[in-house]
Image 1 (cartoon, rainbow, N blue to C red):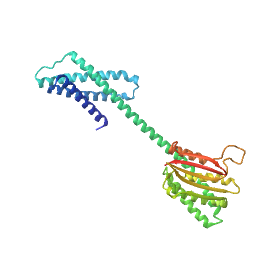
Image 2: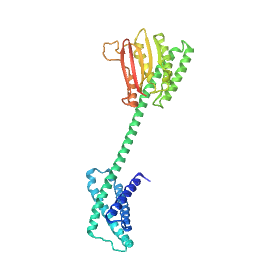
Image 3: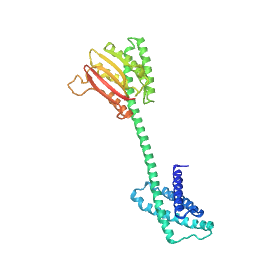
Image 4: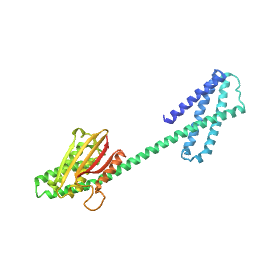
Length: 344
């Protein structure tokens, strides 16, 4: 049974009970009065259902209020007249059969019933259209959220597709430079690259990964980057293993580390340090990637060199967490600090 029929039956059952109590209070208890109350409720239920079928057939719920006013009034008046006529005619016949006397039917009686039943049908119509508009609004909201979810998924996939080629291109170049110099180490780096490939393929299926798996991939990436920078790149990891099960967006820390090396370490002739920290602060996970260098490039510009990777991270955080996650960049003495706060 649909929700409409459940509500429809409940409403008319309540009406019949209320109508019966009113008749009982006015005329006292009798079988014929009880039957009339039940007959009135049954015909009210049937005629308003017929009214609903007309509304559905001509899709009145899609009409504007100005288009709906006159048809609605006409529908209420017609439905009330049919309801009143059926109740008085058939109810009158039953009244005569049960009581053995004529039913006191008059034109004024019909008119008064018509007016009263018109008010009941109008109330029913307002309740019905409120129900229909609510369901319509509910469906529209569901469709809106489905479209937004699809758009977010498409945008996330686009952002992910921008990450892979850049990262893998750099890794392959670094291994190519190592093959002739140290084949053993090159094989080890190929294993690392294989793990990164596998991670890269798997993470495109998920919006979030564990912090532990991300840290493992970052370590592989650092080893690959060390081929190019050698002793110029010093790396420290300060992450409590108890946090490894927490979820973060995939490739988040890897991109921050890549950005730190590309826009920090690579610009320093003597190289520098990269440090990764993660800690829980209340209901937030704080991730910090520090690197030697300056927010401002060596040229005479006043704009900080953030790298395209940070824009990518900001967009992904916005898509996944709205305004609850933040990415900040600041200078801390001789270190540049990229700070990400993610809600747990």
